[in-house]
Structure formats: structure tokens, C-alpha cells
Image (cartoon, rainbow, N blue to C red; front, top):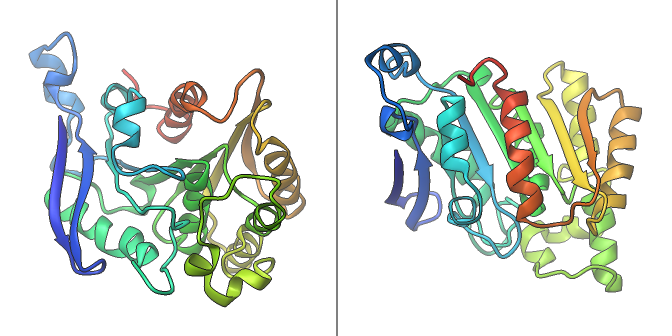
Length: 270
């Protein structure tokens, strides 16, 4: 079942649109009474995967460019897609509080309206590009909420990316100061830096499991390889994939989200 929902967000102070996929019997080509009785534990609560978009994207990106409805159906999970503009999933300085929205209001809405589990061990997050950073940032900032986080082609070293954007080495559609405020001048080691967040979570004894992938033809490939090396130097256990002959595009993300869902929900596929 695919739904487009419109509601008023108190955090963002405006009407918002989200897309939600809920696995239902009609999503399968073959419907049997036996299958219906066992697969859909609506009362117990289904696993939830929050899917984050990249720069220039919105809540429609995953539905338009991937086959996520089929994949969510196969893995018997709810998929949730929201839009945050080019915000890096931050509470913006003079604008929308997207971090608060994504970690507080949206999960509360989903678990109240849909047959979604509230348990940390059933809650997952994944994204690509800006959303790859977002998935790690939200999960490492709120490790109490998510048990696993996955990044595809992620902008994982935010300090290095900002320097590259300032020098013109990479294209940058972002208003960095609007997203990060004065922290933008010292991102490394701040509470927006994924490596610093990981160290904090590790010291406190609660760290989500991590997955990272990137195509070897991606313009963020070297940043991803260096980020993986930094995470492993910190003691992180990451499911890591360098994928040959793939670029920063939906051919790769639609392919890899299937591997991510297998990693998140290994026993779910029937």
C-alpha cells in the first residue's frame, strides 16, 4: 500500500507531504490466505525504515526513481520518505527545524497513524548523498532511536566537503551557514561531525550498526574511502562496499538499497 499524506507540522509550522509504503497482501502478485495470516503483524508493529533523499530531492525521490515499494513489500517493512530541502537534516539557523522534525515529530506521527513498531530494534534509517550524511547524523545524534544506519555515496566527511565546496572542487547547492550557523567555520570535531559523534556514542556505550557503500566512479568515492578508514581507526565495525563501475546516480542507489534491506532485515524476505 502506497500513501501520500498531507498534515500540519507543528515543528515546521506548515503543511507537509510525506510518502509511506505499508506492506499489504495486494502488493504481491500471488495472494493466498496462508500468506496473509502470517506475514503482516500489524498489532505487534512492523519494522520501519526511514529513507532520506539527497540534494535537490524531496519526499518523492525514492518513489519516482527506485522500486522501493516492491522492496519494502518483500522485506515486510514500512518505508517512510519525507522532504527536508537542501538542509543536511539540520535545525536551520533561520528556517525549518528539520533535525527536530525527523527525530521527534515524524516518528511520533508514523507510530500513531500506521502499524509501526516503536522499538529501537525495529527502526532503521538509510540515505544517499546528502541523505547518507543525514542517515549517519540522525542515527549517531540519536542512537537511542535507530538500531542500524546506512549511507550510499554519502557526504560523510562534512568538514572536508565544506572545504571542497569553498574551493569549487565540488558542486555545492547548499547554504552552509544557514544549515550549520557559526559551526560551519569549525565543523571538524563539532556535534555535526560524524567522527566526533561516533566517538561520543562509543564512549557512552550505544552505537547503531553502520553500513557504507559507494561506487568507484562516484565523485565522493575518495571521501567515502577516507571516511571508512577513519571510522575503522576509531574501532567502528562497518559493513562496507566499494562497488565497481557505478556512479552517483539512481542506477547504483536502486541496486544497493536491496542489499541494505537484506542487511537491515536479514530474515524478513520471503
